[in-house]
Length: 168
Image 1: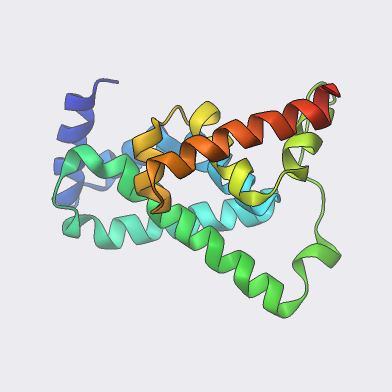
Image 2: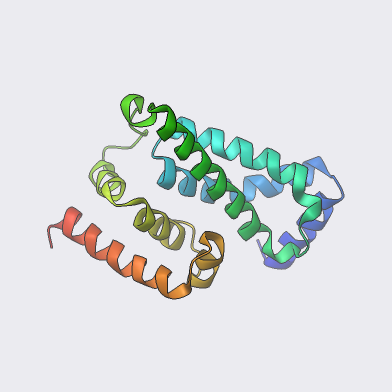
């Protein structure tokens, strides 16, 4: 879908059109899932974070000033929600002890395990860049870090992934 059409949909959603808002969320659902899963490493937690994000977007969409930045705004909300969930789970001491593995198909299991073994800072940047098709400057804006830091994390993440997955 073209960005102009997306901007029009955002404007209609800002006027509280629930059908357009639902269509808008469906448009970005895969990107949201990939990002949440990269941070939380658990399908159920990712689904909870996405649900909370959708609700927050519906409640706060009127505060969005620039419709062309809707996706970045929404992803920032999602990332913040995921980080809060991780922090809460860590303080409760339950996430690591009771976490079930994500649903994976057998062909990608090794790759997903290698990706999951990376530090979160590399995993998130790699997922946003390759899985979410975001540009470096967009990722920097979402994560509130300099562009050079995003570039460094991409480079280091690729090297660690190549070493762990391919044995290079």
